[in-house]
Length: 306
Image (cartoon, rainbow, N blue to C red; front, side, top):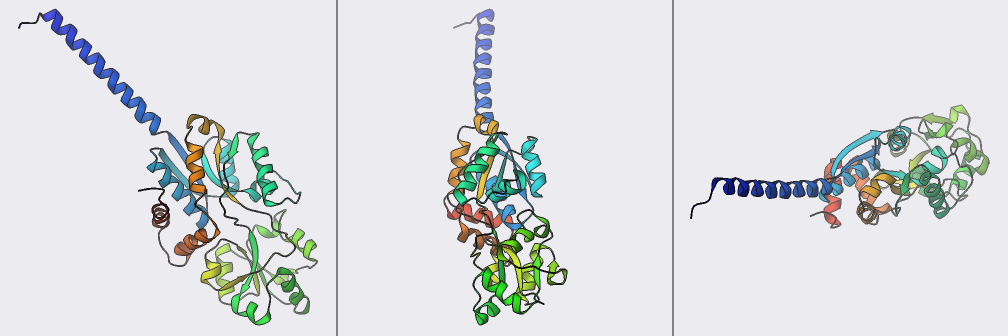
């Protein structure tokens, strides 16, 4: 059967039009699945793991992810407020005290609700917190703490009163923070002279404690080196340190544009707790495993990625 040239051209035009429409729909579908997200992270081990884990997890969900970690707290916050970052893991106590300047003593749930409300006013949405409270603590070399029967900060201060030359190590930030050394001295009724204080990088505090070069030092409760270096984390028996619950925080317009994102991040948050975070931190800081491998192994172990 012969087909006229005009009819052939018309048929080809319809075919090309249908093909273009189909390709356009496919491109739209891929574009919708590969929404672009920029994830931020701070400059210490736990944050490097959390941000890397989130990047891998969301890539597995079809998002196009750019990772920017190694940031200071203030820089990361500015990145969220200026729309340069879309998703971060933040700590409730940091937002409450450092960003929102709230000095009122609040319990963990009140802290979460307050920062959720305050940050919500500027378009930052706090999702479900993980069961991970990475707050500050005082620690001692485990052997010495056991020999002297010291388990609380109050007991440590009692020892200091009879041994006024004791050495305490802090990171550079804690001595000057509004939730730092000065108000802690007021609550626990003690005072450190300059000669009692050694300021150093947070990582060096752990090493100094392990080597018994200092009597007590400021640590983070979820750090794997507490267990790995046999450190005794003392009970904050007067409740000085606020809650620092690790929580995914996302810009509202990003959540509005990606309806599944909140549920996906909440599913990730539900798998993280103090114990498994300490284990992951230890694998990086003590076993010297790569952050990317530790994050990948956790996601596979928890069934979050294939």
